Image (cartoon, rainbow, N blue to C red; front, top):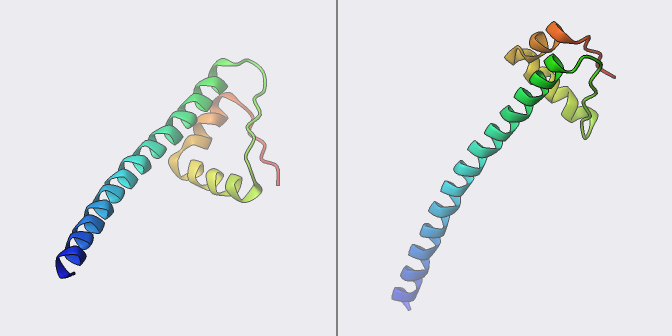
Length: 88
């Protein structure tokens, strides 16, 4: 009985380690994907002659992204090529 519990514990620890590693890999890839979307938006805005509209899934998400972009200097890059208007 103790050997079975011990084996179960070892298996649970191994699963935890794998999940923790996967989470680290996924979060890294999610940040990379997010950065690629930002880069694409800046590049599109600099190459498209007319206006561009960016849609967000909610106002709270948009607010978080706008604050993040402001801190990263993305809004300054966007305003070099486009007039930026944020709906509130």
